[in-house]
Image 1 (spheres, rainbow, N blue to C red):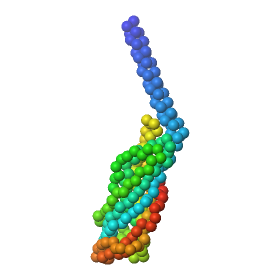
Image 2 (cartoon, one colour):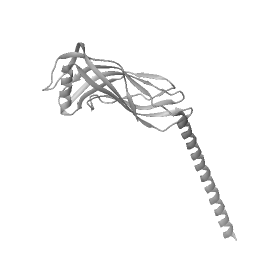
Image 3 (cartoon, rainbow, N blue to C red):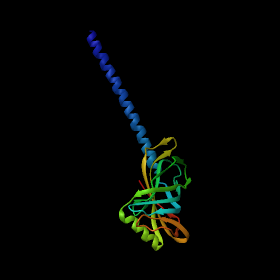
Image 4 (cartoon, rainbow, N blue to C red):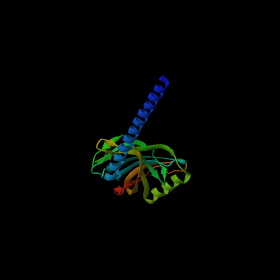
Length: 215
């Protein structure tokens, strides 16, 4: 008799645990579904980025490394009316012919509200950044020709915020073209054994440009 009662209690306990697990799973599914519906209904749009300025202060064309110091001014705009953006991580660096010429610098994490605009002006530098052998030579030729084409890039992670709901983390990659042309004045141009020393015509940023934004 006691054995039969024990089996009934055990069966009842299993049913309760199974019911609780089913309710918990249903709740998770409902919350996930609501979040998905809200996300799809609002359809967050990626932020827009613009390169407003790039000041190239110095270049060292030592072979097989290349160093540069530059200050960039970047603007970001949140185009969403109901979605905020958390910038969890933004690493900014400059490349020449797809080779980094500065080390990445991390911008401070921040929240960007609806339709807000944010401006950053970090100073980027790189000391003896390794590059392919042809890169320093190509930059010397470009400088001698009076122009240099660079890319300001951002590699980061963002989250979307709708009301109190915050999404998971998404990858963000931004690429901004920067054309520099010869202007008045002089800029230090260091060089290794095969480099050219002294000053060359200052390279000035030609005009603000829009950036491509990918994920």
